[in-house]
Image (cartoon, rainbow, N blue to C red; front, side, top):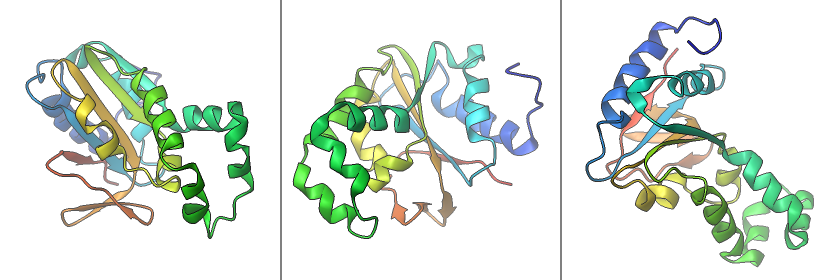
Length: 179
């Protein structure tokens, strides 16, 4: 087991749901799933636990916020983003057109396993930059390539809310890690 922590009842329930949705035997069609829950509910701990479970086959953990910050820090074209006014950031981001979105897509996509489960966690900056992670990686999650998006958010009826954003989920399954 990952660390010495014992799974909570809600983590066990979420783990069972995830095994059925994105386990190593689920490779037909499109296999993209979301794990959502409020801050501090144990989402990141659970996905790191999943990495040690044979039910999921080959798997890899990617912290998306770290990759985004590296892109912004390494490319001098993006340095102004750190000085943007939070109230106008969505308008300010338009000056980059689709270049930053493409750069983020390329950097994350090259880390996706071709055959296995890739867990994309810590995606808060994607929403700040105006990206919806489901629509961004929907086409990548096909065949042997499986993707789990881990999001801080909550379900409200059939909608998933992450901060002020509502995810465009299509028919993608969402597993909620409750209290």
